[in-house]
Image (cartoon, rainbow, N blue to C red; front, side, top):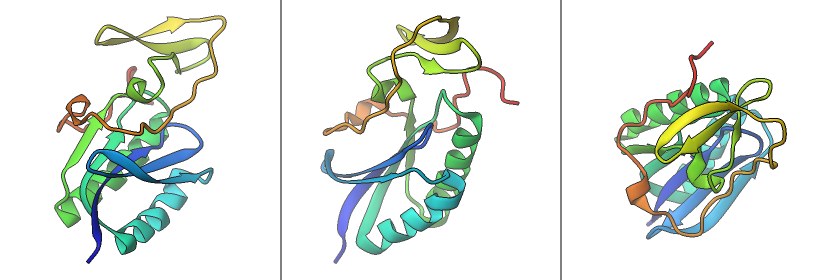
Length: 152
């Protein structure tokens, strides 16, 4: 019998990070520098052979529009086909609320619960990190992409 787990996907920038969680605790990590459109099917094929997935979680933005679109379509398809619930939260949950690159010198910033763009001259290096323990209350059943600014 396969171990029941939840899967978290952070695919807004390189590297792609997948966390495997059992009882809200991180038990396995998968990291890839490949393009999400190329590698996600292979990674998830491996995950489904090894685990029984109960829930899917992902960062729905802001970040790379293409990464957000690919990730959402991929996970939404799995959610529908395998009848696995899909949940989302914004990327600030995984980078200590640091600014996230938008376009040029524009960055996404989160002030209280509102995401805005600001022009910044110097910005700390943005890095997303899987958490050792997930707070499921930070995620929503509304899993549509959060672009922050209009998609191109």
